[in-house]
Length: 76
Image 1 (cartoon, one colour):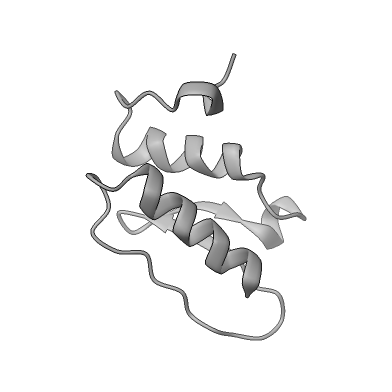
Image 2: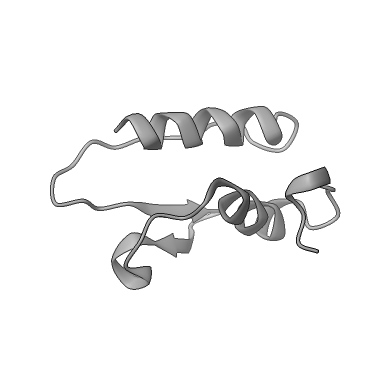
């Protein structure tokens, strides 16, 4: 839960003008799914791993604000 909380804070900070909320739902079994606009954009089960924060920011950006620059977090 600590990693999810940290990632939520990072997303809220990075996308302060684009995101209204980030919702965390406590569960068991290591579920870690990221949705943007109702679409699944990352699944820990499907990927077999947690995302890196830069990867997560890129996935969210590509869905909700494709024109936004992420500075050093952008793909090279």
